[in-house]
Image 1 (spheres, rainbow, N blue to C red):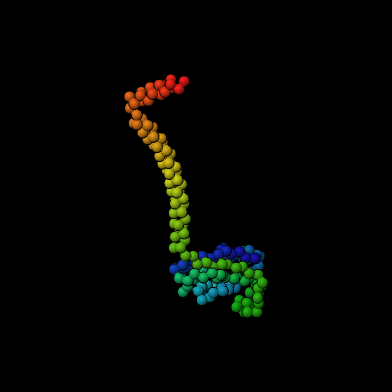
Image 2 (cartoon, helix red, strand yellow):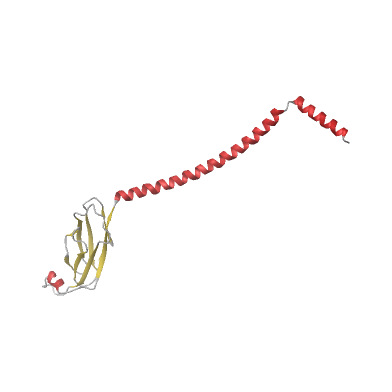
Length: 183
């Protein structure tokens, strides 16, 4: 019989906010509604009861009052509604004598915008850190490869520097001489 424009109302922590929401009568008969809040200390509605003619909308406003710096969980609005047949009956009297089984629940959230920004920055930094870790790992592997090549070149240079050509010739001659003796 009704549709509500929001499933959740979100206030920003630290700010006094006024949020608008609409209740739409999607039936062919007039509907009356009553809105109850489980935390009337922190929230104020413009209208707690009202009448919506068939296929019409009713705009309402909720404000978080002194709770701007308090983050509460589980706050909600309950919109009870019923068919309203007698146009001469007072709406408050109607709701005093009746309890509606039909209702819609709207949750109320107080969002810590600064915390959300911190979490977004932290997530971004974690992604950058992971990228830098991968790049660092690649650089370490390249460094190890370069070090191995440098060790191989250094070993060859030491071998080359350890013998002069004359010394190498003497070793070859001694080797041939010893080879001839042992035959």
